[in-house]
Length: 113
Image (cartoon, rainbow, N blue to C red; front, side, top):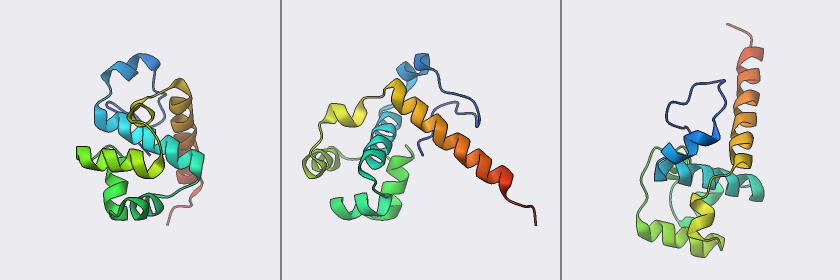
């Protein structure tokens, strides 16, 4: 799940924060949307591009830069535009907030050892 600058667990991300997102963060959100729509995992995305699951995991968390050639390959293999990968909408933010809420519930539900 993409991390955002100043991301505090449990706190919603506001639309005003969209202007401060880096390209890495925008790409991470775009990839999260792609994964959600197509029901894909980082492993499957990586296989489609010929890269490792670990690499895709770092990219989808906004922790790794990608080369322009990799972005070009993403658009060709997945048949999306660069704009599709970098556009962030309020729906994206709501989806991310929902995922974070589910994660928090799972952490709270886990019994302590």
